[in-house]
Image 1 (cartoon, rainbow, N blue to C red):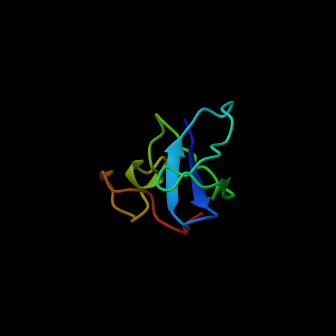
Image 2 (cartoon, helix red, strand yellow; image 1 turned 135 degrees about the vertical axis):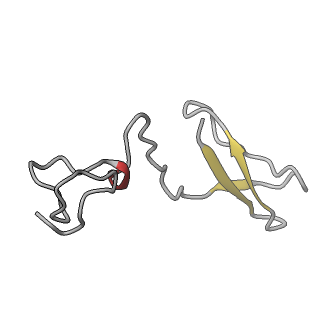
Length: 81
């Protein structure tokens, strides 16, 4: 459920509420019962589940990044194409 930011036009109180996307925007301030306006959202973050960060993936090349004969558990070299 997304979180929406609101501001009261009467008292200036700012607050947030978690609401379903299909829910109607709030109209009343919880502090003074004045009219509220929903503020533009800052955008939602994207959460990718189940992926492995690139820094934890071992080198997948035929030869090692550092030139050693044996593979190590270090992440791949950065900027080494």
